[in-house]
Length: 245
Image 1 (tube, rainbow, N blue to C red):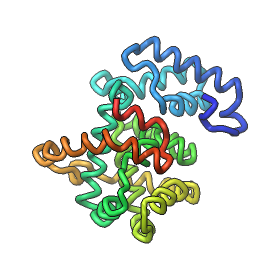
Image 2 (image 1 turned 45 degrees about the vertical axis):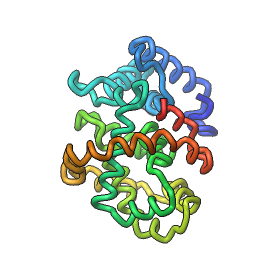
Image 3 (image 1 turned 180 degrees about the vertical axis):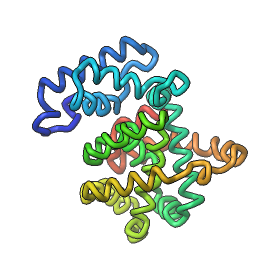
């Protein structure tokens, strides 16, 4: 918990850490299969920021609960093996290749795997890299829509907005540096515009057919398994280790 919002006047306080620990421990006892996964602490921390501890726990449960039980389905993303996360990364690659081919080609030419930056974005609900106001809005949308696809749609919106500047990058280091620092330059209004753009994306229009998707799965599995070595070279978050379990 010491790595969650370090230096923040309130979110990094001992009182907040105690509340977040209690929420996460309670959830781990409630759902022993998932237990705790890196990234969940951000969701718990922001829930505790606005709600009493008991209500914050209920919010975490609602976000994690499977869709068929009236929740948002985040649980699948944090299950052992992170299968849902891998599916979302595969969908992100497919969407880029179809609708942002110039960005897809840039990543391929520079050896940039989307998992190197998007894993951090999605697992932490964007809270580790973007202002907290963005994550709060995304939580609102997930509760309203009853699903978590907005996390993928916003990633697409971010890359679409950044397309012109990304294409000025010449290698892996430049691309990763841009993606890791650009988020800090956006105003609240710009972030709202990006989220609105993400809401307007219909994944059914962006994703390939089931047959085309199945054809790419084996190759994507290999990429995921070898990505750890690349991730360590560029200094990606250590939570990427969980992807290959």
